[in-house]
Length: 167
Image (cartoon, rainbow, N blue to C red; front, side, top):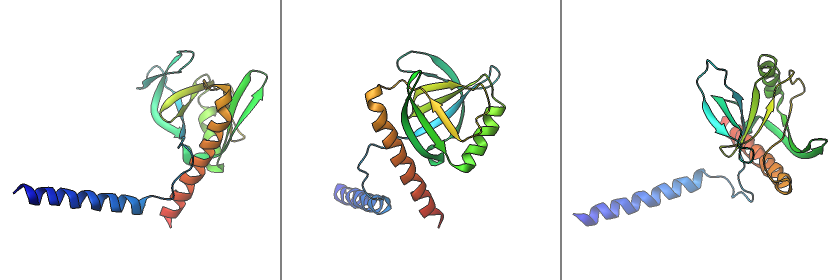
């Protein structure tokens, strides 16, 4: 009685492994780095609290993700007068959504989340009309270039896979 169950479980495991292998794309030669953006929740909204890793700043964010890895065209680490930051360029569609969101959310913070961890936030002072999000992140400066490169690779591959599925 135990032998058929064991054999069935073994065959099922092989079948699952086979089909999972067929569905996967080429092996990635970079660590998947998923960047997403959340909006600070207003006092009357439901939300979850996130904490930035270095400063310990806590921010209550709305549960909706506004921009995802599929919306990111490029990401670059730059140095400016306040230090190192990441500059995200969004797709044209996401750029329009960014303008609408920032026009109605002045005073709130746009929180950058990488691989599920909040790493930065920027206060929305004016509508962002050019499709760029510049944010200071609490990641070591020497790791920012690699992070930016991995974000671009993850986003590009994600959009390609999405386009392939849509066909």
